[in-house]
Image (tube, rainbow, N blue to C red; front, top):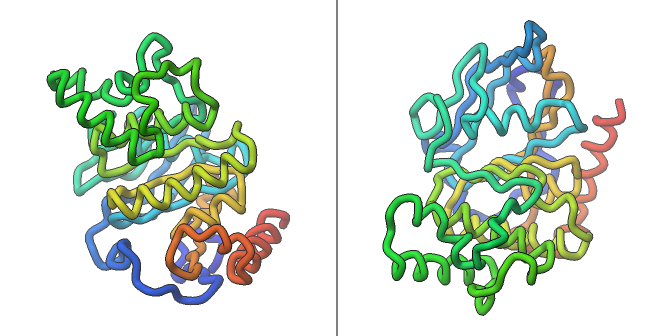
Length: 275
């Protein structure tokens, strides 16, 4: 592993895990790809020469301090921003704007307060013209997937912060995206709730096969969730590191937070970020 625009050999910290549902991700065509992407604002380079790819069902964690470019990358994948250099591609097509193949889970749940949980979850289906029965069916299915069965008729004000984030997650999943973009969705939650939801994300990935780009400030969160970690150092000069995560299967396993492989990876990244 080196601090370079396109590391030739990512660091592997840990031990090989048995095959998982994403095991063929590197061999299959990438779902998401950045090719020498740069972005400038008012003539100032924010990032340059960034290249990476994410395979089907893979979780790529974008890790780094505030202002390092994590959310800029996520916004380009979402189609909210356009690269000023290079090309960003999803499923073989250049990203030219937002689309139903990508869904964003924001830091705040951003729910409609006047809608029930089911109505919030099925909002994209309503916009697409789906009938009431179909919307309810999907809402109940997604509520069960994120652990909210029985709360379909509740309103956001009746839910805890963690439950509201589950609704936001279910709303994205209801649209059936190929890529889910998660912008520090658990940063405002208490540690116990955050760790529970991290485990839920891994279960959802395994059940749906969705590719996930996860933005975080937390080394622990990146190491627990990610199949790879993209450590952003200085994107203005095109410097970043890539780490492979090799934790024992099956995942999620709460005990992985205490596994020697996890602890070694956390220490390696911590020391890299401090220098």
